[in-house]
Length: 248
Image (cartoon, rainbow, N blue to C red; front, side):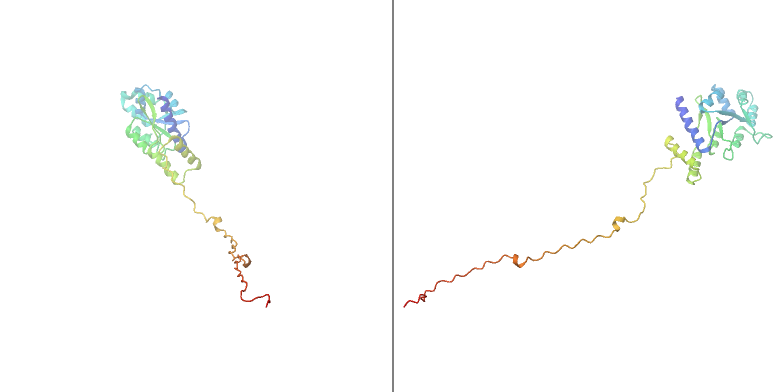
């Protein structure tokens, strides 16, 4: 089961690396719900997350998330202690804090320029993250950390770039490699039959036909070759009336 989860994580990470230029160390933004779920399921985030993602990870949060956990009281005190161990990234709400989900959404605005992963158990926030292209989503399910598969929005974004020929050559090669290796939805469909090129006439058919010498017609046989008809010689009989001896 663990090997299967790591295969899925590797496949999903390669999608974001090849198409959205995610690089190590991966920056993961966590909210209070994710920290609370990790505490409840006894998950050591700092130890388990780098192993799951097979690379260096920077765990971070925002001032708004910490303020939200602080305002919720003792029930989320343990989650607050966990979140305080992570790097705190500056947001645009330092003077007037907002709730954690709104703050995290502002951190991934403008096509997620800092390449953040969002780790949350909030279903509403997760659906909003899926509607943004190029933002990986992480959550905890069955006592394990899971990296969600690329959202349809992210896949559609890559398809649109490929169709408009705005994707560089190295990205096109990565897309083809992903299609063959992973069998993802990135596949553009069945390949049509190759169209035959319209070419000129066959050069051999354009050659002039050679005139064949006329065969001599059969001549009538020569006269000497005809079989001579046997002429029937008429024998003259000996005359009986006259005596040719001259006797008296």
